[in-house]
Amino acid sequence: MDTNYLKKFNVFRTLCLQNASDCLKSADLLKDQGVNHIVFHLATTALEEIGKIFIGWYQLSNKEEWDSERINIPIDDHIKKIFWAVWWPSIGNEKITKENMDATNGMATKIHELRLFSLYTDLADTVSSASKIANEGANQMVSFVRARLDLAKMEGEVNENYYAENKEERNDFMQLTSDPVKRNFIFGELAQDKLIEFGDLGKWIEWVKDSLVKQQQNSESLVEQELARKLTDVEEEGKPKWNIKIKIYTPSHSIRVKTLNEFNKKFKEFILTKGKDNHTLFIEFILTDHFPIKGLWNEGWLLCQLFVASLSVGANGLFWWNIVVDRDKYYENITDLESKQILNVKVIDPLVFNWADAKLILQESHLETALFLNSYFMKHVGSKKFVPINMFLRGLAMFAKNDIHLRIEFETFMQFYLALRQALILNNYDPKENLKDYLHTQIPGMIRHKEEFNKVMDLGKAAFDHNIKENIITIAEVLQMKMYCGYYFLTLAARDLNKDDSLNLTVE
Image (cartoon, rainbow, N blue to C red; front, top):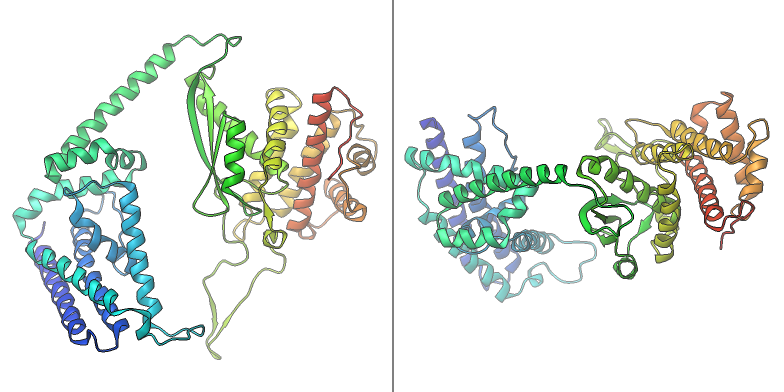
C-alpha cells in the first residue's frame, strides 16, 4: 500500500480515538447530573468513532484496488458503525454464528434507536428526555464503551508490515462472507470451532478456503455420479432427494405462522415458513429421486411457478417473486424552490391495488385450494391445455412487475384475457359466440356483481378487437380479469376431478 494511504489512515485512526475519548470524558462529567440522555448520546458517539476505524480502513485500503470486487460499508451509517465496533473484536475469541451476528446487529439497532428516542422530544412524549434513560443504563453504556476504547487503543497503528501481512486475509474474509453459500459454512459449527482452535485469522481463512475447494470438488463429483445414475422406476415410490427453497412476496395477504404450521403437518411435500414480515413467504419443495439432475433446474422452476400461480388463484390475491416498489413515483421528493414546499405528486391511476383495505389473511383453505389447482396444472404440463396456463403465468409475472418505470397494465390485462379465451376454446367454446355470455354459463356461481363482470368482459372484447384506448385499463380491471380467469381454472379443475363437465362452483 502507498505510504501516503497508511499515514492518512493512522491520522484518521488517531482522530477517531481522540474524539471517542473526548466524548467519554464529557459523559463522565455529566454522569448523575440529571442529563442521562446526553450521557448516553456521547457514549454512543464514542462507540461509532471506534467502529469508523474499521470501516475507514477497509474503504481507504480498497481505493487502490479499482478492479477488485468490493463491498461498500457506508461510513455515515450509524447502525453499521456501532455494529463493527461491537462485533469485530469477537473474531477468534468466540463462535461467530448468524444468530450472534443478528444479535449484534439487533443490539446496534437498539442502541441507535434508544439514542434517538431519548435525545429528541416527540409530540407523544409525556416525560422529559433525561428521564427516558435511568442512571444505571447510562453508566453501563459508558463503562462498556470505555472497555471497547481501551481495546481499540491496544490494536496500535497500521504500518507497511501490518498491511503486507493482513491485506490478503482481510480481503479474503470480506469476499468469503459476501457469498451467501460460503457465509453459511463460515458461520457454521465446524468452521467456528476451527476459528477458536487456531486463534489466528490468517490460518483459519486458509483452512476455510481449502475446505471450500474440497466442497466444490465433492459437489462436482456428486454431479457426475448423479448424471450417471439410473432413474428410479416411476412405478416405485421415490425417495426424498432434492429440496428447492424459494422466497415469495404477497402484497395482498397477511401471513400467519399458525396457518403454515397446520398446513405443514398435513402435506409433507411442502414446507411453508413466514419470512421477516407478514408478506414474505418461504416455500420448500421436497422432490423425489424421480427428478433427474439434468432437468432439475427447468422442472423445478416450472413446479415453483405453478404452485405460486395456484396460490394466487386459491387465495385470490397476488403471490410472486421480488415484487417491485416504485408504484406511484420515480423521485425521492419534488420541492418548490420559491415556496420551499415539498410536493406530493403521484400518478392518477394507482399501479397497485389497495390490498390493505381488504385485510386479507392467508387461510389454510387457501393453501388447500392451491394444492387442488396445482394438481390440475401439473397434469396438463406439455399438453395443449397447458398453453392458457402458461399465459396465466406470464400475466402474473407482468402483474407483479408493473411499476412507474414500465407501465404494462394493458398488456397484463390482455395476457389474462387471452389465457381465459384460450382455455375456453380448448373446452368447447366457439369463438363465434359471445365470450361474455358463454363464460357466464361456466362460472355463474362465482360472479357476485353482474355489472362489474359485464364491464370487464366488454373491455376485454374491445381490447381484443383493437377498439379501445390502452390508458382506459387500470390495475382494478387487471385484477378482475385475473380473478375471472382464475375462477374458470378452478372450475376446470373441479370438473376434471369429478369427471363432470357440467359442474359449476359457487363462492361461499
